[in-house]
Amino acid sequence: MATRFHPYNVNSQGVKENRLEGGRTYEYGVAIDKKYGAGTATFLKKLSRTIEPWETREQDQLTAAARLGYPVFLQV
Image 1 (cartoon, one colour):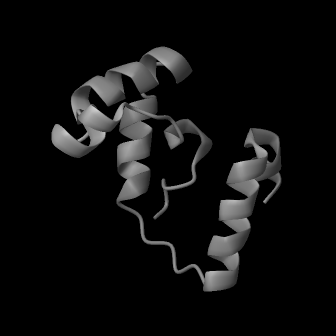
Image 2 (cartoon, helix red, strand yellow):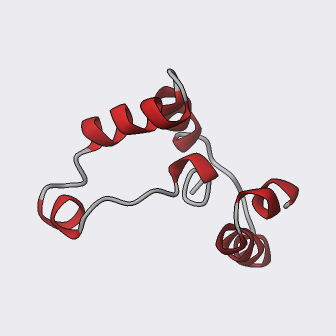
């Protein structure tokens, strides 16, 4: 959950890659590093292993902020 709405992780792959090919995690990591800089994929992987005890209200706020864009997400 820690990376679900993180701005670096809100990217898309095609339906074929996500549903039929398991998400192509290696290629996704390479693309993330290319887009945001070396080490970003590793950072997201470590972040994904943290446990955030969020309440439903907080998750709703993160979801709404992610829909409004990166600057709003950073403020939340």
